Image 1 (spheres, rainbow, N blue to C red):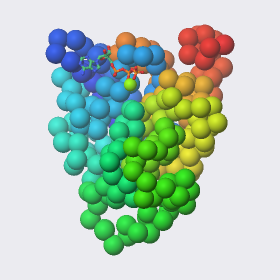
Image 2: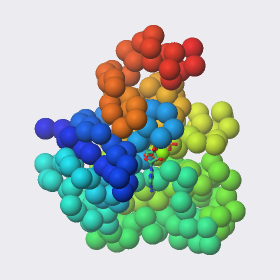
Image 3: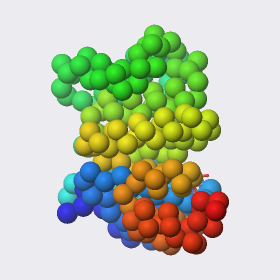
Image 4: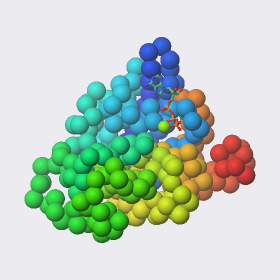
Length: 236
Ligand SMILES: Nc1ncnc2c1ncn2[C@@H]1O[C@H](COP(=O)(O)OP(=O)(O)OP(=O)(O)O)[C@@H](O)[C@H]1O
Ligand SMILES: [Mg+2]
């Protein structure tokens, strides 16, 4: 059984159909990339999975449970975390306070300090800046904070929306290394990216979204070699 199953999803904004019947699966331990151009429907798909939007048709099954009608905060407590597009950290709160908020749905509060320490180990820049307000962090640091905050909920799966957006090439590499290390510690990853080359280089499998439909899918390594993917998404 797949850890996450999206079935025949159709999502509208008013009269406009953004998602036109997509189905895909994420298995435990995988890194799955969802790639596609601006407006393809990547963010809409993530928002529907995490309960921020409701689909007109179709369903989302997470660890065998139908979560299509479950509200977002409950889905977080079931073990699904979301690192939103554009980071969305709480600017006026400190790094530490942002991280603590990531754990708000957890019942095992006694382990929080230990988990904070492991986040600071993974992101040493956040440790150095724990009392700095999040709004004054650089873009890359804010991305790390958004990831750290998501990890504080101890998710079994984390959904990331364009983590490399707006970052310098060095930081892009750093963020992708972090995503790989998150995956290696056993967390399943659904990664939305416009940086298709980097996403495919760390993913196991990928789905290509075009105007609300999945047009191609396969092993990431095969897609990296695919001529039409190269032309359309890899700038080769
Ligand atoms: N709140 C909204 N109201 C109306 N239309 C919307 C809304 N949000 C998104 N859309 C439309 O839905 C389609 C899919 O948008 P979505 O944000 O999911 O794309 P995306 O693949 O994430 O794009 P990007 O790479 O630019 O982030 C687009 O045509 C967009 O204009
Ligand atoms: Mg988007």
